[in-house]
Image 1 (cartoon, rainbow, N blue to C red):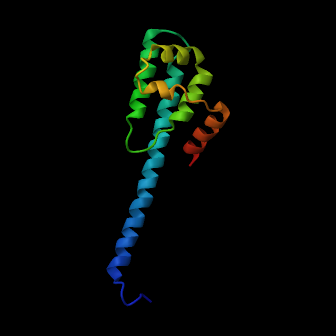
Image 2 (image 1 turned 45 degrees about the horizontal axis):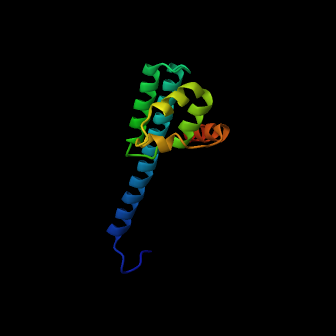
Image 3 (image 1 turned 30 degrees about the vertical axis):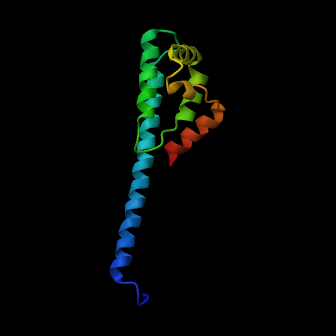
Length: 126
């Protein structure tokens, strides 16, 4: 039985809002999965080298990752994995950045790579 002051339409509006929020969370999870899969593909393609082309591709990818607005990308985890699996590439990319770059702060992130890997796997499994 509904309270006298609340109309039925309010309950149906609430149900629509809740369904919309659930769909939004599903889209966010799918978007994060997509970002992680793209990172994995990019990591497979890039060699651990100081090649300027590879460094440029990495910096371009990281800049694009920071421009994602619809979800919060797992930047900390990605940087940690990158530092662990491609240390030479990571080091040379860090050295090419000007001190005023917003990526300078990102390259200072320090996270245990095993924890980062576990978090990324959790994102993909959800």
